[in-house]
Length: 156
Image (tube, rainbow, N blue to C red):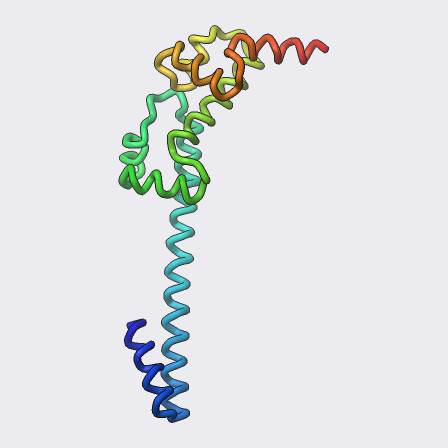
């Protein structure tokens, strides 16, 4: 339809008839409006899905979440899940999940006397050694060092 309207607009410019020109321009504007409304609806659905997935991840951190399992849960493809995270969240799915898990781990380290292994498990890390490596890579401190630092800062 859009290409037909553009061809018609081109023909109107060659044989100017004011009534025909108005009709073609009105049809072209109507088509543009329909395209914009459709785009807005797709963006809105994508944003709503992104927010729903965010909520799901935060509520289920202790589960062994993967891109594939979350995509299946929301009846979308893993590639589409990655796409909405890149577009809406500015980071990929796995990066986002890791950051959320580490924020939860920091909260648990600051506020509770749980063992590092328990915290790793509560945050969805199956292997506590892997958790410690990831935690140190992101915070430049081991979980135990982070806990000690937070406690000494609270006492000061």
